[in-house]
Length: 520
Image 1 (spheres, helix red, strand yellow):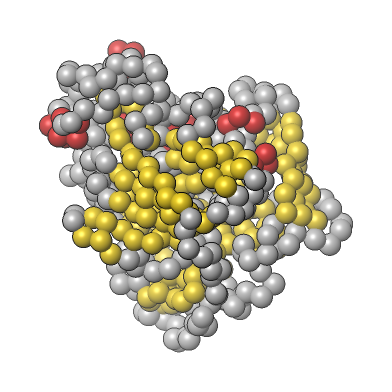
Image 2 (cartoon, rainbow, N blue to C red):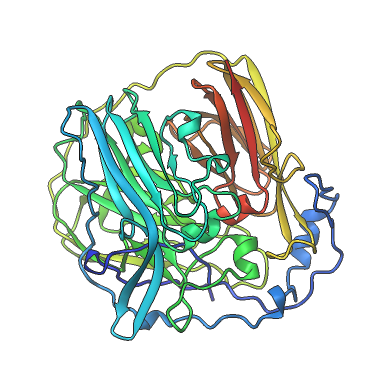
């Protein structure tokens, strides 16, 4: 059997919320034959590391010798309400082209059922955090107030903002303090973005407790502006049987946290009506869950990715796989009348430990009304040309066992090193075009995200074959299968420190992150 992860409905009426967590359970055994026992940033991965992990993953490594937490039954939370709408962050500026507002990160208690009240951490009491909606060319000024018990940052995921405004872990806002983020929205950057914490060693907990929000940049010349829109912001929620946010298990740290509840806009298995060609913005805001989206009864066209619209619409003939932090824009056209289920089709990403096989998950109920066909504009957009590469960089992802690491006994490394905030791993020159090859030298899927820019994929190399990408798009996050190599073309156009990492946030926290210094 595969694990079925269902979720609840946290509507705007109760303040909303979001979190990311895992429900995989271990049959505890033991992790012997430790490959490395280090506290430094270097670690020898060992010649047979992947075979060793695949053969010896029935581990008996109970974190702090605690019994596994009992989780809340999926039947305990209501489902089937209308899809919640985003709370809109109000612009307090009265000047054209200026967006100014305040975001407050703080604990909030939300009544989930008459018997369950849960404390989350949220932006402006809302799960997901309020929608920030601006236009290309706008100037943005956001005051962030930290009312949490620990430091935090806000990373404007995918947005092209200066390094010192991007919420790097070096720029934390202490508990009880506030700071102002200011940046301009470049022309040509219309797209589907989001914001979330990026503090040092705290991001996994803060995202799991609910901190994530929505950011949409619009164009005044949008070729799809006539279409109605739906927003699907996916997140995970993992609750104990007492209705509390569950702690991470060893399996959560190893594989990325997933929850027994999967939310859309803070709602559990909501209902929605689709009666015409509709534009759908999709966010995978989960910590570790991969979404493999299937939309039955509809023609589905991929029209946008992380960095906005693509040059041409792509008709999808198979489920759309989105790793954590990836986004997409779709146009869906109902081809029948009736009720169908939006699903995530089981995807085996090579999890470690004694976990159930992956299974299909029902995410929402779609009430369809057959609609007339439409002709989508083509081209949708012309992507910028950035020229030939002047430099090449190579990254290698590896995993190692380390019994001194209490959070699951694993380290996740880039080029043999775990993240160190005091170390610069790579340097680039501003405006130089580069090719990066990322090699996932491990037995499980990881993805790659970089701050401060967007990239295009040049090629994939997998199972001994090299081939071009399925489609051309601007990306900031991309998945890599086990032993896959992906080459990307990239250009940083602002100086300063940039982070790059796996966006399974537990893996990022356990070392799979590096630092790039962009120099003038």
